[in-house]
Length: 281
Ligand SMILES: NC(=O)c1ccc[n+]([C@@H]2O[C@H](COP(=O)([O-])OP(=O)(O)OC[C@H]3O[C@@H](n4cnc5c(N)ncnc54)[C@H](OP(=O)(O)O)[C@@H]3O)[C@@H](O)[C@H]2O)c1
Image (cartoon, rainbow, N blue to C red; front, side):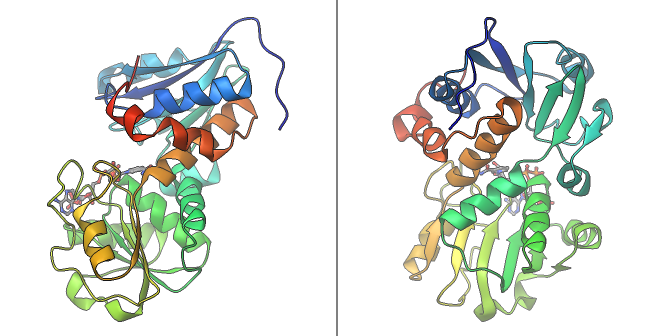
C-alpha cells in the first residue's frame, strides 16, 4: 500500500443526512484515516433538505475531500454536481461526492460495494436473483446484478415501483406468488422491512429456494433479522448488510484519498461494541 505524505492541514470529509446522528460512517472513516496515516476528519452533519445546496456548495474548497450522502439526499443532490460516474447516472443516486479543484463528481459506491460483499460471501455467480424492494438500495442492487449477468426479478410492496425500476434498469417485476422460488440462487432484501424490527420480514412466509442459495439482507440493524433467521433455519447461507456497508465506505475512501484501505479496517470499526457505542461526533 502506498501511504501518502502526511498533509499539513487536516483533510475533511463529511456525511450529509437527516437524521445523521445514528450513522456508523464516522467510526469507519476515522479508522481508515488512522490506518492510511492521513491527517483527516470525518464529520456527520444533519442537513435538512432545504440546506443541501448550501452544504454541497461548501464542499468546493481546498482541503475538502468530499462527502457521503444518505437519506434523503441521494437523489436530490444530482443537479448540484458537475459530473456523474456512469453508475451514479444509471442508478440515479449518489452516495459519494468527490471534490477536486473545486469540481464535484458524484459516484455510487453502493453498487460495487454490494458486489464486493457478495464476492466475500462466495455468492453464486449468475443464475436467478430476486431483489426485494424498489427504493435506492434496490436500484443499486438491480444495476449491479445486471452488470454481472444475473437474471433479476424485482418484488416490491408497491408493485408499480418494481415495474418502473425494471423498465429503467432491466430485470422483471414479479409478485411473491409468481416467482419460481426453487430456481432462485440469490435472494436480496433491499427493502427497509426488518430495519429496527427483528420480528418483521419482507417475506413472512419464507419460500423454498435452491439449496445452494445465498440470502443477503442489506439491513444490518439488527445484525440477525427475521429473514436471516428463517434462511438459516431452512439450511441456507445468510449474510447481513455490514459487508456492503464496509465496502461502500472503503470505495468512497479510495475515491477521496487514492488509498485502498483493506475492508477489514472498516469491518473492525463496526464491531458490536463500536456499533452500539460512538456513532458520530
Ligand atoms: N448495507 C448497506 O450498505 C445499505 C446501503 C443502502 C441501504 N441499506 C438498507 O436498505 C434498506 C432500503 O434502503 P433505501 O435507501 O432503498 O430506502 P427507500 O428508498 O426508502 O426504499 C424503501 C423500500 O422498502 C420498501 N419497504 C419499506 N417498508 C417495508 C415493509 N414493511 N415491507 C415491505 N417493504 C417495505 C419500500 O416499499 P414501497 O415502495 O412499497 O414503499 C421501498 O421499496 C434500508 O434498510 C437501508 O438501511 C443498506
